Image 1 (cartoon, helix red, strand yellow):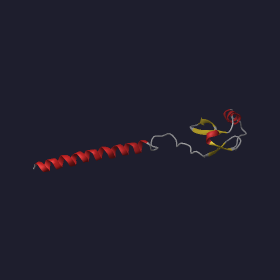
Image 2 (cartoon, rainbow, N blue to C red):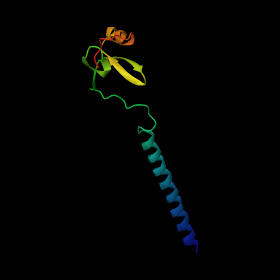
Image 3 (spheres, rainbow, N blue to C red):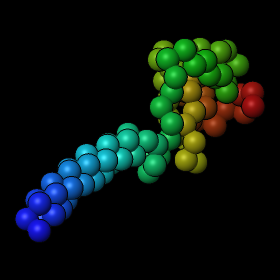
Image 4 (cartoon, rainbow, N blue to C red):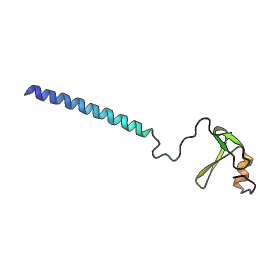
Amino acid sequence: MIIRIILFLIFTYFGIKTYLLVSRYIRRRFSQDTFGRPEQPETVNEMVRDPVCGVYIPVQQTLTIVSNGVRVYFCSEECRRRFVDGGSDYKK
């Protein structure tokens, strides 16, 4: 009878330890996932197109604004200013 109680306590102990270990792993895994993030991070070598002059440039070298909830990338301050001022000569 005492052996059964000891075995029960041992299995309960390791069961609880295993449960806590697995739940911590799952919480860490899902907290690093993209759930709830507003946008995906840009990749390192991603190229984007300037809507004003049509030049392709790396994301790290751009100027950005958010227009109607969409991030718009520009190669220079002049292109950004022409877009903001509503210049009719930008390409889509």
